[in-house]
Each structure stands twice: as structure tokens, then as C-alpha cells.
Length: 307
Ligand SMILES: Nc1ncnc2c1ncn2[C@@H]1O[C@H](COP(=O)(O)OP(=O)(O)OP(=O)(O)O)[C@@H](O)[C@H]1O
Ligand SMILES: [Mg+2]
Image (cartoon, rainbow, N blue to C red; front, side, top):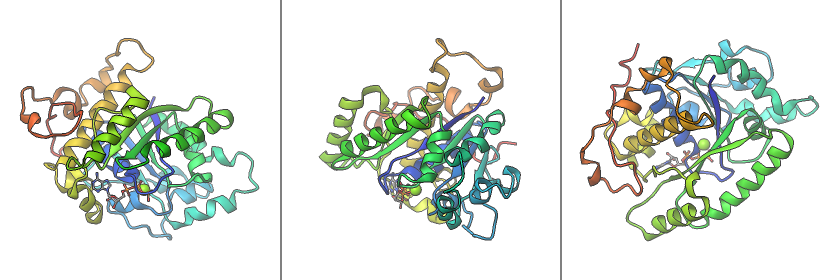
């Protein structure tokens, strides 16, 4: 059964979309069947994968308002056969108003996604930077949240606001909602501030913070305008390496969670060349000064080489 993870932070511009897109792409390259849902009317995830946000085409809006089925909305992502997108468009802004009188309006996405757990191993939802009905739908549907936090002044304040929101959601809509992890983004190794912020956040949140830190990397900023995830734009960039490392942590933690010893799953074990078995021990990872990085470079499978 697949897991559902909301990529969330009410703060704008912290790297939610970059993380949702590139983590999903890394998981797909590792042959994990991945569904990426764009629930932000800005439709940045949709555009970052090369789709236009045409309001005439069926989108998540139509699925949430029940006028079309999932099958009619889903899009295959070019060169990433294991990745499927549910696109957004500006119509999503209207969901709040349209569902205002509807009972169970926070459950719409959950109802849509539950049957899809059988078909996808990973379901990621890219949230808008606000706490509205769309975000509440994501938090109600999700098993856990993945929180990108930008390495900047007042990062902890932003996190504590988000934690309060999660507490409220647990009290009302989704008692089981867990924290998958916090990922520090846009780390700039030329500044002390970035280092201080990472140290501070780790001190407070400990293990909840991923070891992998995403560097500020120009290639990550450029990739969306080419409509490609980083691996199809510049697979040798530091940004690509960081998102592969994050995917590796992300997959490994799933195996450990709540099951005691990791259970080998015959369906999955052969399916993770990029993440599980493709490490190159003794590689030159030490040259790359990613703070707290995992210290190894997984083999990068050729995107698009999968069936
Ligand atoms: N690690 C990075 N290095 C350099 N630029 C980045 C990085 N991550 C994201 N960016 C750029 O920073 C900007 C904001 O990132 P992104 O859109 O992922 O944030 P967001 O949290 O999704 O924003 P919003 O809250 O508006 O949805 C984008 O222009 C993106 O290309
Ligand atoms: Mg975004």
C-alpha cells in the first residue's frame, strides 16, 4: 500500500515545489511508482514538469468537484515512465467557494486518493503557501508531512507556526497525521547564516531533520523554466545529487517505520537501482561540502531507460 505525503509549509518560496518535483522524479527514476499531485492554483509543479496550466484541460479541480474521474485527469510525464502527475490550474482557486456548503469538503482529496494507494508506492502532494481548504484537503488525505525549510533567519519561527497548524489538524481532521521529516533547502555554504540555521533547527528537531541538505544551486532554479526535473536538465549538478540523496533517505526510512526490522519486499527490492544498491563506496563524495550529507554518491540511472 502506498503512502501519501503532503509537502507543506505555509511560508512561500521555501522550496516546496522544487522538493515535490525533484523528489518525485528521483523516486520514479528508482522505479517506484509515484503519483505527484499539484494542489496549488499557481500550478508551479505542473509547469515545472513541462505541462501548461491550461484552464480548459481537466485538472485536479475537476476531480475535486467530481466532474471527471482520476483517469481523465492524470498525465504521464515524458521520459519518466514511473511518474504520473495530476495537474493544477487556476480553477482550483474556486474550490473553496464551490464546496462551501458541501459536507465533508475537507475529505474530497482523501476520497479520491484512497483507492490509488494500491496503484502507487509514493503519492506526493505539493501544497500552496497558505492554510486554505486546498491545504486542509492535503493534510486530511496525507499520512505524513514533508516540510521544506529554507536556510534563512527566523526559520524556527516558521516551523513552530506549522507545528501549531498540524496540531489543529490532528485534533479535528486527521488524528494520525505524522511528520515524515524536515528538509533544509537553499543552503548556501558561503554564509555562516545557513550553517547556523541548520544547527539550530537540528538542535530543536533532532532526528526529524533529514541528513541531506539541499544546496542553493542555480541549476535547480533553472530547471523549472525548461519544464524538466533536475535529473533531466542537469543530472550532474549538486542539486541533482542532493535530491537523489534525499530520495535515498526517504525510501530507507519507509522500510524502517513501524515494522521493526525492514521487511524485504520482493516487488520492491529489485526496483531501486538508484537508491538501494547503486552506491559507489569510496567515491569522491568528500569533495562536495554538503553539510551532513550522506557521504556517498548513488549511481544515477539513465532517466527514461526504464520500461
Ligand atoms: N535549492 C534551490 N536552489 C536555488 N533555487 C531554488 C532552490 N529551490 C528552489 N529554488 C527556486 O526558488 C524559488 C522558490 O522555490 P519553490 O517554488 O520550490 O518554492 P515553494 O515553496 O514551492 O513556493 P510557493 O510557496 O510559492 O509555492 C523558485 O524560483 C525555485 O526555482
Ligand atoms: Mg510551490
